[in-house]
Image (cartoon, rainbow over all chains, first blue to last red; front, top):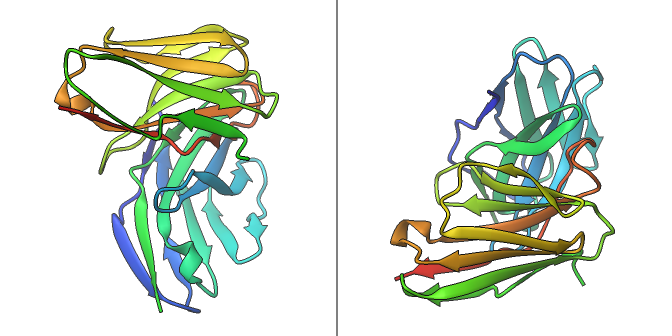
Length: 114
Length: 114
């Protein structure tokens, strides 16, 4: 079975600084998808960024980028120029190709401090 | 208007009550999901519906009863719940379960069982 591990229950970062959230996963599959979702306080969960395992290039979405290390089964999220609106729970998730639904980690609570 | 709408947002019920959670998606998706979100635990998949047919029941107790009358609506009927069932219940949809796995979430229904 696939598992997703987020080893940082809580993190904080100063506004405008950079922070990296860690995620590791376990699978025997070779083709799969990885996701980072953001859940702001009392608001819906939204997709931040997605990575296809067959792509070697790391995905980037504006201030959000990932460091995908397939051999190490690591998928970290880097947030640059952190903003107060980035305060949220961040969930790492996995699905293997052609078979959702997603398997989620426990989440990391990120606080951006002014 | 969000793509996935859940009602009620908050629900308090006794262990002998019967209540229902409702989810509606306006995205034209074919698959819908119920997840349970408890503090310090990964999101737990409960049920998956694809084209109104239940395709996954993740060992959920029978006191939770899903209903999917069409591809746009999903219900979770609740009966004789236990205090440990208190959690945030998230509804999600996707284009289809054979796709890349991206889910679109509602804001959740916060359930408290007394």
